Image (cartoon, rainbow, N blue to C red):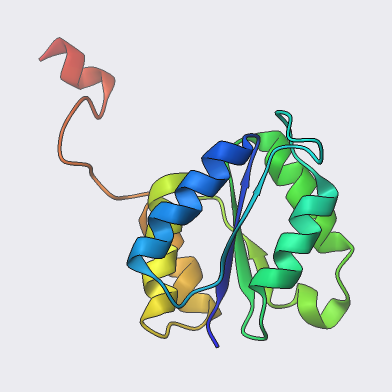
Length: 141
């Protein structure tokens, strides 16, 4: 078993595409997209997120990453409805969605426990990309 990932997005296509990318790095990890509304529209769904948690948490826990604030609200409501034992091993992480998902997936793939997978996602908050503007000071330079 491994720590699973739930990718909460307002877009079904975005969540699915990110799951596909992350699975390239972590083929044995349960990475479950939970994007869009029940009818495929833009938004988030309590039911889709709840089902994704059930699928992703195979006993070692799961982390949820989200794209926007209202995605966090829907995800946190879904976690509130879990039984207390499962809720202890399901964590919502405030990390960049794409980099956080890939980093967390790799951490889980190599056998990391819940704490290590959360740490992997959080490390993405400090990751520097290959280039581009990183601060307003870069525009003045």
